[in-house]
Image (cartoon, rainbow, N blue to C red; front, side, top):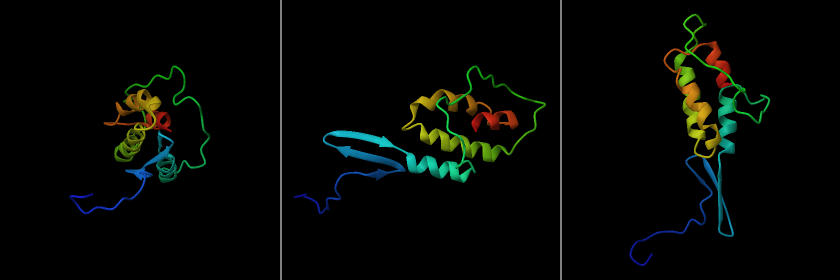
Length: 114
């Protein structure tokens, strides 16, 4: 501060849609507000929560006969989920699996994302 003009803004509390809590040397990060925004954006704000991010033994595969859905919208959902991985690494495997089908997603893949 002796060399350059600057102002102290205090402790970091919010940065790039990541909420930061700092208390007595402990730091925790979360994306609750962003997650709610994503749920609202895709019309799932009133969805039922679950402890498991994917059905046990769910098998996803290319579905050439399946009803195709809007690939751009599917990619938007996947992109939002990938950003949530900063604070939710437990979702990494599931998001990686559903990301494999961004070229031609079908209803089956959309249900898995939901």
